[in-house]
Image (tube, rainbow, N blue to C red; front, side):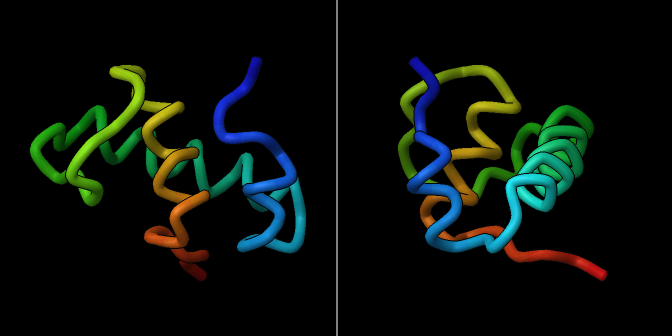
Length: 64
């Protein structure tokens, strides 16, 4: 099962397509700079899942 769920993610971001774009950009950033973590504790080690956790916690915003 996906964590965080799409319902949790959509509370902070209007579009699921925007969620995908934000998560991809953030995951790439985390791969390039692994020490640049925002949250104190993550439930997983994978960069995409960590990006989704940050979006669910409303720590990552859309960059234009």
